[in-house]
Image (cartoon, rainbow, N blue to C red; front, side, top):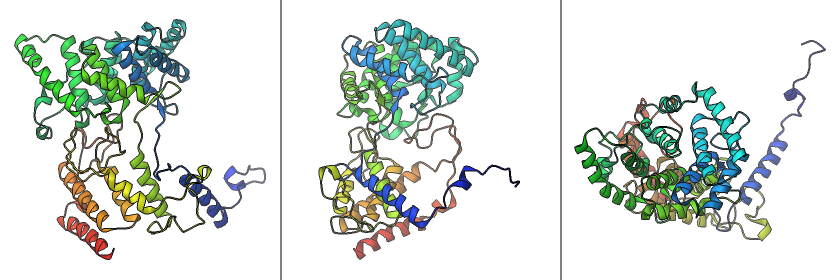
Length: 469
């Protein structure tokens, strides 16, 4: 290197010493522990989402634009304030613009303008910028061109394409026939049959399959009258199914987009007074943030709590203590400003044990033994949250009760593996943490997971830890 060469920023930084690492760790640890609730666990708040806010604005506008005028206006203004410089919107304020969210925001502002949600001139300018963006990414701004771009983005999986297209149709932006049909009548079959039939959406989207399918049926007429009549006859039973799987708080999966798609579909089909819609709008009213936005999900408290416990354990913290604090470093108060005591690992273990599902889940029909991502009515047990909970209970110290819970959780995971082989492939649609093994992806089961000997060793391992405890 010549004498005139510039020194890179990395070379000008002081060396990373053990003292600097220890200081950084202590700060990070103190901050992590300070984020606990008074009860001792962590609550994971998701970022505000343009996607969620757009769907909520659409749903509430179609449900009752006068009753929800304040929420509609707040959501529309938030969308206007957070439009990207390129004219589009991303899933969050820190996400790149994408065609799917931009289509939803375009529909929301179109409906919101009709409801007087914001000054018309400002909405018109925002819509012009959005259409310029859509033309650049889709190759045109015509309804057919945009619909084709959405269908091409998701391929055979209709979990996301149909809701986006029907939302746009409800706003009068595309033709109803652009959305592939959804066979809502399949919801009339027993839940045990779902894994054997070729659903065009992932299983957790069953509420959307029913509501969106009913909307399509109301807006389009099949060429064969007899089939149309047979599908019409299936609607009451499908709606009873929808009502039976709705959580008590109205929040399917605690997810604003899913709740919103169900709400706008039912309202668009002339069923705005249905009990499902009334519970759903109450959920949306409770999920809105002070700035007028909505998050994707209520929270991920179980997931974030297990991540925090496992991170501390991996860092060498001794969490398996019967005292009131963790002992690798000087005690750090959980909530210093309130002067509350540190949380005992026993309390965290108790909290995790209380989150384990003890009965068959009413929505997914999942067997007992798993954990969901939050202790809320709309959560469902899944593999990643169950795995995190099992590791966290091990790190908090094994007791007789946690050992029994863990054996149930391990069995639940192993049974799930037999139903859903491990998926390794680039996603063909928007990522989701709930998806299992969607059609259209290559799957394989690694040799490591195949032998039953591994299952035997897992069970024996927990028995050994339980005996030692």
